[in-house]
Length: 357
Image (cartoon, helix red, strand yellow):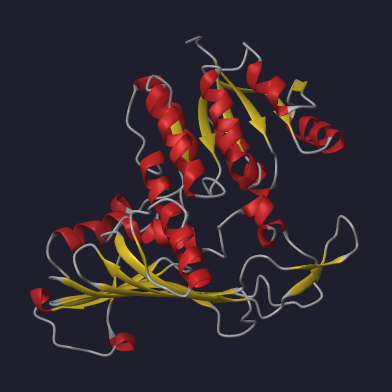
């Protein structure tokens, strides 16, 4: 490995500009050497804005370039799998944007390729939710604050899809987004840091705004992903979980994970990074959720965004990826696809997934 780590960018959208480019540029010995965006004009605009020396019209050519050591994939999900497979075959490390892939089959192909190229680092951009308070939550759960986990409530209400005049988003086109719906995979990944995985799901979904204008063609098209999702789940330890997400709620928005155990309860507000809780282990008596005391997040335990640093550290030192490895990505892609299958078929679906019925 040369002294300088040479990184190529494929897809330069909002997260790439806001997080990945600044994060990489802040690391000594890392050079962003090339970029390829969806269109030539936007590729050159990004190159000018961030002083990237080389531009590529086709992502395949960037991946094949021998002067690039690592690829950061910032495209929509439909390209995550083909770019990752090609990059690994070309001997490049890969950091791919969430959501991991279009479906579980693609995620498994990516994991298989990663295992076949174990000398290369592979990472999925993690859910940004819960990073600040992760250590506090993990320490409390590990110390028995909850006792036996019995119930889980995961809620995510926002207005991202509430405007009926808004155009069709790539997130609502299954050819581009696959089985990913709303923030389901993102909040599920966050929960997996603190709780056991589901073994069965029963779901229903709905689109309150079933058609929108396609900005590319100007034609009104069918919306292919839901703006409302409800899931009942049985977890590996026998606990029950409820997921309720909507992008069509202009009022009363919020996002949280609440864990109820035999000895206590923990409530994590994903928007404000505030933890509240109560436990018999701490001598507390039962209180209403809104009356629970706040649990502070000490400065020395507060986490944060260090995705790019973790990626580079893993390349340089061989340290394992914590947030997020491909194995975890496969689990949340299987979950999102199971939800889609259950909603389509009207039956409960077991995890891990069998082949497509």
